[in-house]
Image 1 (cartoon, rainbow over the protein chains, first blue to last red):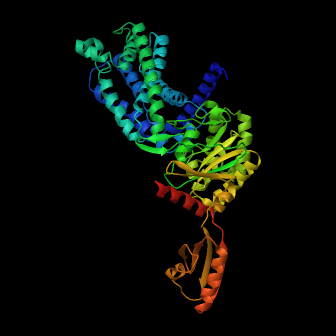
Image 2 (cartoon, rainbow over the protein chains, first blue to last red; image 1 turned 45 degrees about the vertical axis):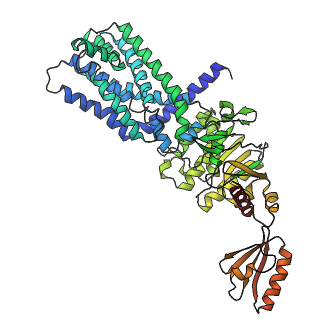
Image 3 (tube, helix red, strand yellow; image 1 turned 60 degrees about the vertical axis):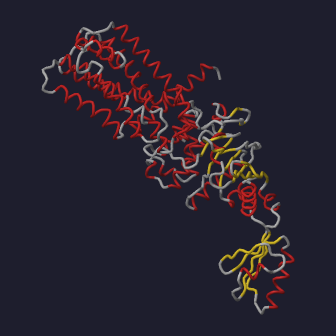
Length: 251
Length: 300
């Protein structure tokens, strides 16, 4: 089979893995708790009682929900399957390790986009207007893929305990939320704060969301999109390379 | 192929060939390296040294995996999916067209007695039903070669019988089967040839009957008397190598069962004992296995 034929064949098998993940993992307790309920309550606890406009709150809420939901499934699938003893069967199928990882990313991506759409609809219901819907849509899709790829980086250590992976991802995710312009706009951060913010991929999505809804961002949109793209490529390469080494060690 | 786990040499330069259409058994005690070997052959882990190929395709490649069906040791199907969905997922991962997969799926599930429960979630299945489903999942791609790692371990009699019958039928249709087991009877009944692996090395490869007969000194005579005779006394009878007490009878191992029978009759008549039962036994595959693995253990 030609290289292109193999790529298409593996892409179809990634979709089959993603469909399997959607049916199994969307209703798992840790996914609902850490992916949906947690960011909502965290956001409410930081915004209730403060005199903030809906236009300010919705970009932050969408950013946070997208970040938490898109990183809620991809980290736990591999350790969960190793623990449930389904991973060896999957690895003996004619699929590459990259195919398995992409399947997990697609399931997490779809979860992130789906739940974020609900948040966006809520924003529209509350009177928010999206002045640049096309750019916003591209940003949601790109960021969801970026965050879902980051999720697979969290599951690189060859532990078969989903709770350990959730702990690792929480240690990274919480600080990221606080440095990404969700609660405090980048313009209001000191120089050192802005420098820290630039190492978070969520910063760039929040910036695009603020541009699309509030009409102004901190960085040029092209830079935001390019950096998100670069982060996505980085997470994908790291996840693919390192899962090649660690996945066989889970068996 | 050779495989290390850290400092531990799990599989030590294992080398063998399995013919097309052969039913090949891979026997060994726990920890001998059976599962590690199967995992290297099915492309789940990589060998540290050496390589293997299946129908000319290097193991671990997509082509080698495409023609193999696998039942891993202690594997599970997805408990939150129905049996049918598990089966169709496997078909998708092997690129089987949906209509062919449906047809094969129905036929396999009927053969394995699972069809009436095909839409039940796997979490409601018994252990035997799950294992039968995993076998269906391995067969839905109609593989040329089937790898099974301890497929009947811990299962109910009905499931074991179904699985054995299916495997024999598949082999009769020309499928190559690679079966790891520590069940000697299973290997003896099913396999054309068996390899015995111990401490990561293959100690013998041959047909079960040849392995049995090559085990010199493992012929035995089983005898019971109307009165209790201690094994120590029987061990002093000329021609007896070792004695094993089995309930109310004793098994006496010897190189010459004919002479031993005469000695036992003389012993019973001179001591006023009546023989209740007397059987001569050829060495079993288990005897061959024990002799080969113990010899290797002593050599090391």
